Length: 380
Ligand code: CMC
Image (cartoon, rainbow, N blue to C red):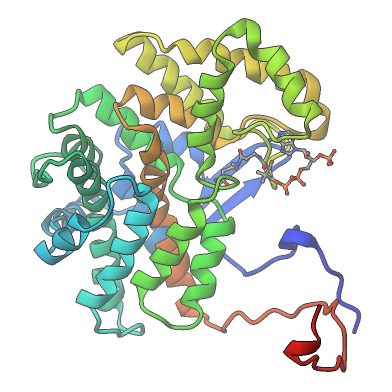
């Protein structure tokens, strides 16, 4: 049988899934069939409702949602030994590495594994969604030499994270925008980190190992790490006047423009449209960001130069500007992405377990055969 090789598995289905749908030509993203704009912009939608929808394939009624929120609140705290472990992390370490280590460490504390028991699945989902924000905020405070603050049960998931991070209760409007942004990043079909979660899940290991491998995959600059790189790039550009010279220079050196391009979208990412709108709302309320004008000009210039190749802003282009305005440090952008994408990873973990077959693709061998062993003295 001849097997066609496609780098990056482009266009090759890795699974069957009913969790989310993307039409990259029309710019459509749906979670369980609901268009992302409709879901995210519903005043009553929250990230936890979105997570429930993705994982259990139904919008929870009031009672079910209240119970889920209550469970999450109850499990937000970290074991003191995890906090002690974090004290040994170097302050200069990247928060994604800290998060990956903490996610994996959960497996040490919750080692029981019962993958065919729905109550085990639920407990793992709750624990992971509850603890990841606490871990991210705790690392931020601890690397500054402060004690982590305890989560507050009277605050929503989004507001509580901003509170734990900035040590003050957030403005309700800022918390709402953050909540929408969490929903926007929660799921996106079989991207690299989700694929890595599924491969790990397919070995029937524990859910903490699944999340740890996904976190490690999300960290790369071609994936979740791009939002951080976007801000660095806008800083480097420095002024609207410098946008075009910068772009010419980058393209001449055949370098990628961060926050642009997507394997699936050949039009502007629908999430980028919403995030741009949210950024504008935040600037109106809390003051302008000098990098926004640069970003808009860069989008215009990239469209002129690369629009014919289908290169438009992706989700990471405007998300950093939103996060900056919410007081989130640049190197926490990707961990914040992980807080929200954990919902999608868990949905795929659960879906994978329901019809599991271990991932074991093939390869096209390009090496030698029957080569002689050369003894060390004879090697050049
Ligand atoms: N800037 C300039 N040119 C680009 C860009 C870009 N950002 N993205 C793609 N291209 C060009 C690329 O040079 C190539 O041109 P040619 O056909 O002439 O050689 C063509 O478009 C196809 O690019 P590719 O790299 O083969 O596309 P891919 O599907 O393998 O990569 C991507 C997709 C997202 C990795 C890539 O667009 C990229 O590196 N973008 C910048 C990093 C980024 O913003 N990543 C966030 C991705 S979205 C959120 C997420 O996944 O977390």
